[in-house]
Image (cartoon, rainbow, N blue to C red; front, side, top):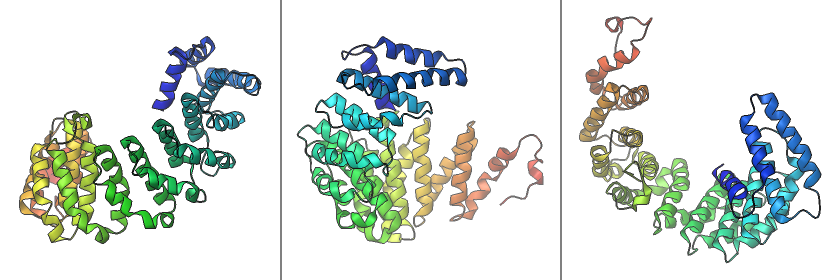
Length: 382
């Protein structure tokens, strides 16, 4: 969606030429007072595009505009299939902006089993070998969306080669493409799974972060095969929590919180019922609980995931006490979301340490006190 907005701004306001007709279309849709009025505007637009898009003399700049207008037609719930073939043709163009527009359009228009997919596989193969990394990135975006089980072998060797590309953006997208292949056809990439382990050690945090998604799936399927990575995960999580990643990965002053959350999910799986593996995690989990900012939503999200991890791994009394203190803050909050998180987290902890429930029972009952609910003294608790 953001790519579409960016291209729309480029077309409407940028140096590529301003189209008053396009601006008027967007304005009229925005000012429509009813769905019926909006539909009438879009249907007129469809008739206009049907007349113009098949004109062999249409300049490339105008064709790009027409394809973007087709995207608006589809976003508003109407059929623009009459123009799909022109989007496919635009992926063949040598001009970067036109090629990006074509790839964006086909990834939004087509499903991986559409009849037109076969027409762009060769283009994708060629673009994956391009010297321009922006072209490679555009092709990898299309790979993630359009390549199906039958066409994976056609692009797989090139995607694997791109895992060692000099540009971190390309390596990141190659990891994502390989992950997509695993989701679609695990057997087709079963011999390549060690690549995810290697990318975990990538110098770029973005590539490392991308590798966590496939590794989470792999650990979910077979945790025992990845126990040897526990120390690596813990070391990386420690570096993240200590603000060793670039500031660009901070979100509301939290160091790479989305990477932290994914790692905590993985550690929860690896430490479940395993005292030795869990022992490596205790220190870093305690540090995260102490350092996370409970005044922000993202800080509370990390704290909640940390509690879930503590409740999943082999029990540690100090961590359970620290988690119980965080839960107390959640339950006392004025935010209904935090109260819900507190109740959910408490439900996980009392399975390991039932006595924790005693200190929170009144707070939990207070969460039930709404109009029409009996007084808390009438409840039997825990």
